[in-house]
Image (cartoon, rainbow, N blue to C red; front, side, top):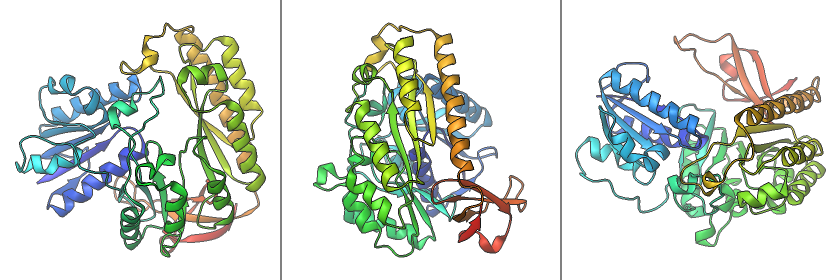
Length: 408
């Protein structure tokens, strides 16, 4: 029986889809490309914005037209199950709590999905070089703009011991770099009396994994201990992704964020002092309902004062479940678009400045190799330096999944 998977949304979703695909292969399914005819189509969905939900609906419709059974799983399925069930041709609707029951349902071993008993760490297996390693799920913060706690539930993670067991399997699969993923990875271990720093210390003991990236972590949970570990441990890549969301303390308060901009600035300064060449990206939301021209300008000026490398810019999208959806906006769609464009231009300039600093320098690159859509060997191979510069070189099969010292 053939099965095809499609993922929308975040790196966490990609890790989960990869785990489902691996389970499918073990159970005897033939995993095929989503564009190919299949008996079963599985769509792992996202609900972070209205645009994401629109893309989910389009992908579901496309799968239905293909004629196979369609299973819709993940965040959109968690928040909008009744809407999805009304789509003719959809066979299963499984939210984040029970997507791992998919195969029991397909094989009719269970009539009704039940909530998972515990968190299960998983990692992506689509390539043998870098893997997204899901170490945590859910969130307890309930920021006023965000529907994720309603879609993914409360923060949870496995014990360090259980997480290390999965990491060892990842090492046995030949993975050279693991990128920590989760909804709020800085909250790892809170229910077990453990923490992220403790997990990292144990992961560093695994010889066969050469690199770890911390990925997105909240500024109030990015501890001095973790930053110093990145500065001192060669396996921890000097790469930080820190959500700011706004450079206005008034907006941060309206968002119910757990810090002020001064804390964020302190974290950036501390990283730069300890790790001058680190790549530092920040998330920013433009157009929050209470964001006036004055408050946006506060954000823009604050960003200009920071020594960051790039931005991830998001235009505010009201989520029906989120508290901010009930606030009358003080900005227009046109203003939101203009603010987004301004920050995208700013981000591009910062990224170019960061890249130019390293021209002619020596760096270690982990090379990745991928066939093209027709199975042909590509002309180039790509890889990332320790501080997240994307590098290209002529394709060389012998170098794939190896770390090479190069001149940029």
